[in-house]
Length: 135
Length: 135
Image (cartoon, rainbow over all chains, first blue to last red; front, side, top):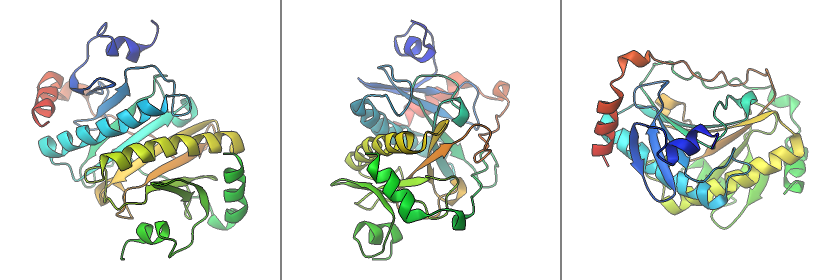
């Protein structure tokens, strides 16, 4: 098995476990953005949001809430970012679907948000139609 | 009804709809980070990841995949970021749970990722135990 997170899910590699259920596992990110930065993965392999089984995505979403509540109760952050990156162009490093839970303190600058494009440059009705047609 | 996204979900305010099912709605962000930036919301109100009904979180996760696939097929991005912010300290602006789907092109700098804290400063086993105990 070549996938780092599959090996963690199988117990072949150690992790700092935060929570676990039948379909998902949550453990600390060992290169954290902030204290308490936790990852949630499905035990079944999926590369990213496009190819992961829908039931696994749903199970991860429920576990993300549980872990966010644990982080809330244990660490009392001012906010929490949930981030999931797909492909290297979006910052994905490990090619097994995983969701980042990042506790934030006011003004910590751990994440900087995003820039905006000029909204006048977007034909919103045509773009929405193009996306609807791709269903 | 004071909530902007509840009013959009109820059809009281317009949106550029991308997809819809019984429990969720997807529409274009009108202040986009990149072309194709789409939001997915549950039709039921929840403020953030902590208080939204688990079934609604799961339904949103399934819809996020569908919209990511639409974005993939229509726009052929190099990557996709999925981001969900909780409370103003984490960048949340509208206080109705919503997930951002942000198509990325290599080198577009639309999102900058995050900085890392010194991992030597974290007692990982003790922190994991603290979080597990908060379940």
